[in-house]
Amino acid sequence: MHPKENIVLLVDADNNPIGEMEKLEAHRRGIMHRAVSVLVFDPEGRWLLHRRALGKYHAGGLWTNACCTHPFVNEEPREAVRRRLFEEMGMNITYDGLRHLFDFTYRAELDNGLIEHEYDSVFVYTTPIKPVPNPEEVMDWRYIDMRVLEEDLAAQPESYTPWFRIIFEQAKQHL
Image 1 (tube, rainbow, N blue to C red):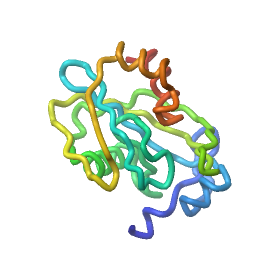
Image 2: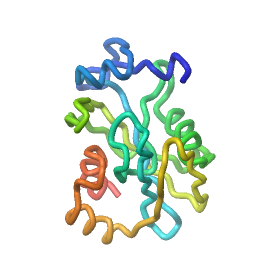
Image 3: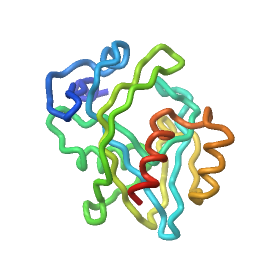
């Protein structure tokens, strides 16, 4: 891992930068930092979900949206989306059609003692490109209809990442 990948940008509740910190330390202490998430849809409007690899430092084995990451300190959020979508899902997207949907903050205590406390900018992208996932990041993936996803989230919320459960509810209001 490159050193700059270990650093997150600390932000206040208005997304103003207030410092930098090592990523794991920010998660240990629950300090708010900048993050991005992307919701990817196929042309039929189905959600692309992936199941996080078991070796991830948190939330391994849980289903989540197409991609989440922490932008590098001087990286624009949409650049982080494009970079990480390629690294995790093997999807080389363009900026055309990449749309900022909304921002939100959340705090979630994870089962391994880490704390997600993020200012998350959510983007949306529709593409016919099929994922070619990185097995170090992703153990499975699927496209799923929104109605079926909503039913599955209600039936087994523990199968999904805490942040995706929040994103899904808010995204329904913006899509």
